[in-house]
Amino acid sequence: MVEAIIIGSGIGGLATAIRLARQGISVQVYESYEKAGGKIGERNLNGFRFDTGPSLLTLPELVLELLDDDLKFEIRKLEIITNYFYEDGTRLAAYSDVQKLAAEIGGKLQVPEARVTGYLEKAATIYELTADLFIFGTFHRIKNLMRIKSLKTFLNFRKLHAFSSLHKFNERELGDKRLVQLFDRYATYNGSNPYKTPATLSVISHLEHNLGAFIPEEGMFKVIESMMQQAIRLGVKFNFGQPVEIVEIKNGYVQGVWVDNGFIPAQIVVSDVDIHHFYSSLLFDSHRLAKIMKEERSSSALIFYWGMKGTFPELDVHNIFFSANYQQEFDHLFIKKDVFDDPTVYIYISSKYHKEDAPEGFENWFVMINAPADVGQNWEEVVDNARFWIMEKLERILGKELLYYIVNEEVLTPSEIGRQTGSVNGSIYGNSSNRRYASFNRHANFRRDIEGLYFVGGSVHPGGGIPLCLSSANIVEGLVKEQLVKIKRLKNKHIPRPRDIGNID
Image (tube, rainbow, N blue to C red; front, top):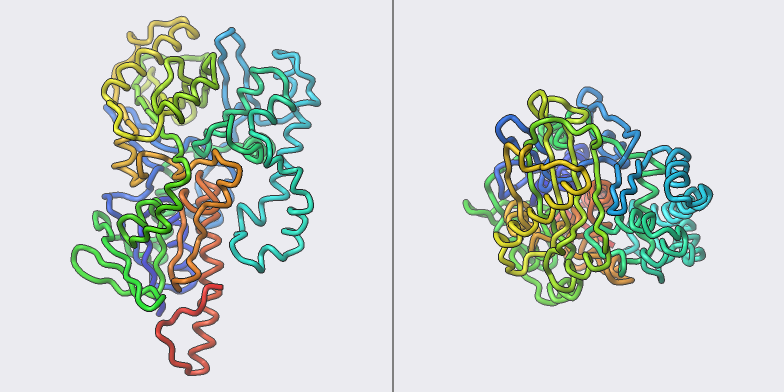
């Protein structure tokens, strides 16, 4: 039996474990922490339950297809994806229905509805041109580049708007600065700066508004619980609290890994850890590490978990309170490496749909602002300042003294995010996409010079976020299938080989 080791149990690692186990491979997962999930976690605080990471699902079929029918969970499509609040008093409901969204924007911002639907049509075109090669496949293999769909992508490259920043593209297409800010926000979905990241990232708005945004009825952590059950059902063995110390390579072939109690042999090793950490600690490679360090790190987050007394009917599941000066906010994040004194505030209230997440008559507020990567800031001071600025903004816009309503609080800083998730510098998405070709510089899901070594997760191709992490697992499954065919062919021919893994490419 072919043996595989997965390093890390984030959603990419879990998906890979499930996919490989279904191929008849013996899979072990080594996780340095005491539970699975990576950035998708939950926190319980005096009767309040909080999702600690992603707060909605796009392309939920990528999760559900991994699960047996009895493990599939109920999901709800959001009618209103996000409520937006602006300093000038404007309030927008971002409906999942495109026509309702266009009507809402047309009525409140006097932007022609055709401008909104046209924008989302262009985002859909980007998705159609990029999905097979850049999301669900890999451009790192020549044979993929030569496919007809890939050639169509390159022939229509101008439609990807790769030579314009997302902000400039949104200004040109949408006009109204409030609407521009709304669609600029999608750059933060992979920790990037809309004033620098390519307009190709407008594809994210297609996923939410054209394809839909969903939430598991029992909360986001249900995704991890169901995947864990599926993996265990397939015979995957989990080793929690056991970090991998070294990945062993010999003569260009994976041999296995070293953990604290010795060597574990394997013909396949899949890394689901931050690629920076992998090359600095598990398989030191100064050349690749230097290349990774040339790219700017993604942003992080500063999160307040507030148990709130009372209910707030003006708020929905997802709420955004925008900064009055978005560009300054991103200058502070990526240039000054600090938190702006007028931050954009995101509030996620899962108890709006899952009542058990808060006691009756209370709400659970996940309050987040974008924060810079951890470079040694005084986070205690940053937290105190940020709490004041957040409270000031929310009280001004909502017209309520929130201090009276907060009955519980916990805080998560970028440094703690780094410690808990293994994200170097607390950068949630690894490297940012703040350069035109940053996406092309993301590490491939394999190594041509090391047979049997693969990579999944948000710090490698195709990028961060649940759909992309799941896609990385799908890509690795395809690569491993090719290796299994070669293994069988070699066994049938009785050809001696140094390992049971053939060439990657």
